[in-house]
Image 1 (cartoon, helix red, strand yellow):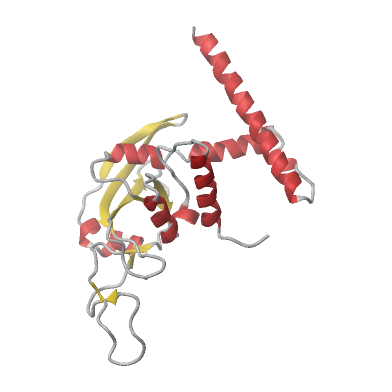
Image 2 (image 1 turned 60 degrees about the vertical axis):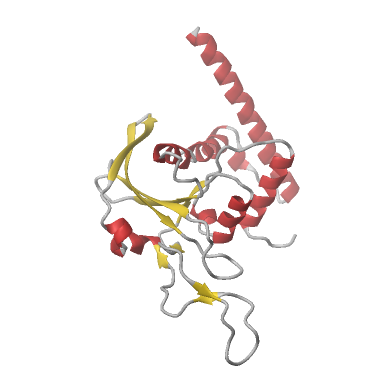
Length: 238
């Protein structure tokens, strides 16, 4: 086995799924993937819409910085662009919220994301365009992404803030983005159910192949039960 970052494995799985005819309207992910700029760039290069969480320390520009290929006076010839003297470097998204006028002076807007078992899910939102750093060149991509800052107004005990980045155009309504961004709980719930009810967490073998087979069998059992539940629910309604 050769080590590869998780985001590279995810891209390989994505490409395999697309070759098998599977089409994704949206891709969403946690900050472990979202905080990798190259992962975001690769998804965008595949024309795949995404909205994913990023960490509060995710760095970007609020406006496209100027770069230059002006040759050096001494030494080897420059092969990568660099920022023009005086241009600011990237800033963390949490600092954008506190200090950048584009976010700091913007009022919070409440959005009713969805209904849940515990009641309505309501978050306050701010958003602005950002430019992320490229992996190889270290300068900003020309295409702006959308930074969405969400504050949980239902949690009065502590201020919960999430940061999302999306490559959706400005024409895509914000409520559509929020619905996609907050849909990841279904995946987390599926792992919770398979661990607690179908034995996914009870594997005690030592073989990697056996572990993958155990995961697949639990996933198939979960899919079967979901189909049966939907079938019974439809009969009950009718």
